[in-house]
Amino acid sequence: MLLIRKMKHKTILFTLAILVLISFGCQQKKNYHDKVLKAKASTVALQEIEAFQAAKNTEFKNPETSPLSDKYRKNFEGLDFFNPDSSYIVAAKFIRTTEALPFLMPTTTGEYSTEVVYGKVYFELHKKKFELELYQNKELMLKRGYENYLFLPFTDLTNDEETYGGGRYIDLSIPDSDMITIDFNRAYNPYCAYNKKYSCPIVPKVNDLQTRVLAGVKAFDKGY
Image (cartoon, rainbow, N blue to C red; front, side, top):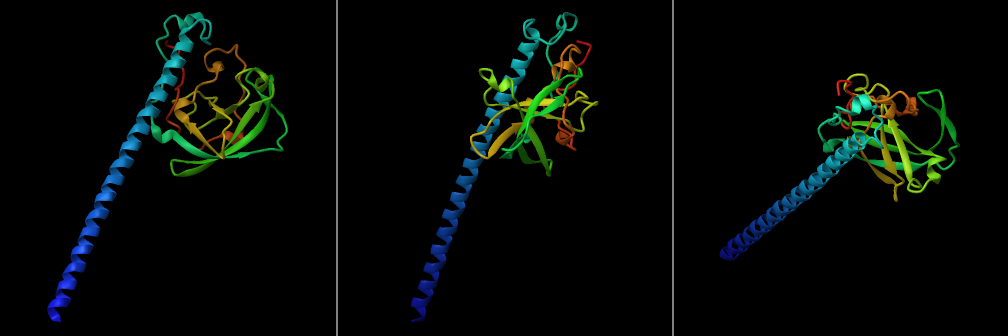
């Protein structure tokens, strides 16, 4: 009887050991799978950021689309960007503001742009929680290709140092769900940062981020 109990005990231990090994193997496989997926996602994100930077440089080199005057465009080689950083790609909660009324957003030339707060986004960056407003221009939305366009202007603690003092912009599209991706690597300067003849919307105070956003386009160097 004692021998039978010992055999049963050994069988149980052996079974438990097998289960532990299987579980460990599955976990290792899962971790490897997750790492591969993250690596692929990071590679795709990097490629998209590089494509964005290349498109911006092409825009600035082309005399038909560049905000630069001939004086600066002549020696222009490329914009100064922060290094691509996937930590500045955030998934934000999107909440539509259905009852928002149009308002006049002041610009750098003293004119006004008619905007509406289309929605608000809530996200975390640098372990802090933030809230920003997204705007829709009532005139621009009537133009072909801009039906779903949303405007995200923001300021942060790098302004007047690494970045343009007036803040930066990000172009977004109306999301299909209650989540939206905000890639601060795509933050760019308003045209008035390069040429005072342009009229640029001034970033509302509610869209000030009390953190350093080390991503996107840096301040314009007049030495170009």
